[in-house]
Each structure stands twice: as C-alpha cells, then as structure tokens.
Length: 275
Image (tube, rainbow, N blue to C red):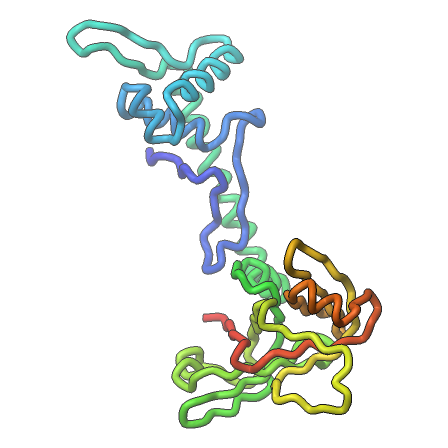
C-alpha cells in the first residue's frame, strides 16, 4: 500500500487545485502525525522518523506519548541494546491505526475528486473559484472580459470590461499578447499594484495622459506609519486600492464619501488569462 500524502492539507487534482481539505482523526491525529508513524515503521528509529516528518526528537516523543495515553494499548514499543542496537517499532495497534489512516486518506481524496468533478460541471461556479484561487502580490485584481485587442508591431493594447461598465486598458508587448493568445470575448483578470495607482480629487480642467482614469468614491482610508491605503468604490461595486504617502493623503484631505479618480498607466496593468 502506498504511503499517505504528507501534505497536512491534501489537494484534489485539477488545474487550479480548486478544493482543499484537511483530514484529521479526533481533531489531533493529522497527516503530520501519521507521517511520523509511517517513517517510524519504515526506519525503526525515532530519531530518523522525527527528522523525516518535521518533528524534534522531543516533540516526536511527546506526540506519541499523548496518543498512546489516549489508546487502550501502546502504539510504539522500544528495545535497547542487543545486536541491532535497539530501536522503536509500531505495535500491532500502531500498525492498525496507520492502516486505518491510509484507508481514510484514500477515501478523503476520492471525496475531494468527486466534489471537484461536480464543481467543474457548474461553469460559473468553477470560473469564480479559479479566479479566487490565483495568488499574487497585486492588491488590485479585476475580473472581466476582453472587449478589444489592438495589435501593433511592437505593442498591443487590450481593454478589459469589468462590472459596472468600467473598462481597464493594458499595454503589453505584441510578443506577450501572442503568447497569451488574447482574443475578444476571452475571460481575463487585470492586475494593478496599489503603488501604481495615483489619486486625484480635482483635475482643475487639465487632461492627463494616463490611459486608465477610473472615477469613484472614497470608501476607506487606512493610515499606516508612512503610507495610507485608500479604497475607491467604482460603479458596479468594484474596488480599486491606492497606496500613497501619508503626506499625499493629507494634502488631498481624503475622506470617505469624497469623489476621486484613480489613475494608472496602461503599462502598469498585467493581464492574466486561462490556459
């Protein structure tokens, strides 16, 4: 029988690993504990088993003692001296517990796979979860649909329509656009770092070169030691966050409910599309 997955949060198979679940017995015997039993069964050495499963030697003894104290019979037996130099091994009760975990782990994985298959049959739900599963450092992530693609010799501009009729334009190299196979109607996510967003409360009749100028209402101002995070609510419910200096926030006299415009260059927008 194969060894159990030693990841404490086993993942179901799938391109986006949409569903995760942690299996444990009695709320305390988890994948790491059974990795210790597995390694102990394989090596006959608690020192080696502890290193293999990420425990200190003392920590391994403590967790085994705690589990054994809660069981009617010991899970591990040790021997000292002799030709083999002593060691540790699982008792029949320990072997039975490890076998039960292996069976439960296989059933748990089968359950996760079944749920992922069901999710994949719900196109809207699966698409939402795939968007949520992407992890990046960009604070601003806008899901939408590519409305237009204008390819040039060196640069391509792609416009993404998001909720509320708001549009975000990205400028990228034509080589990158070709690699992404950008096309009108394609689902995409526009990513913008908060530090790339400039806020304006009064343009005083001036026109700016920034390709993206999103009008909204200040929804929050979170002041830190040196910088402030300012949220701007856009039509349709989307939020854009700007990271600006505290001095800039004070100069703009930012308050919740105040109209403002978020400005950022098209080159500051990164696009993500599904494979």
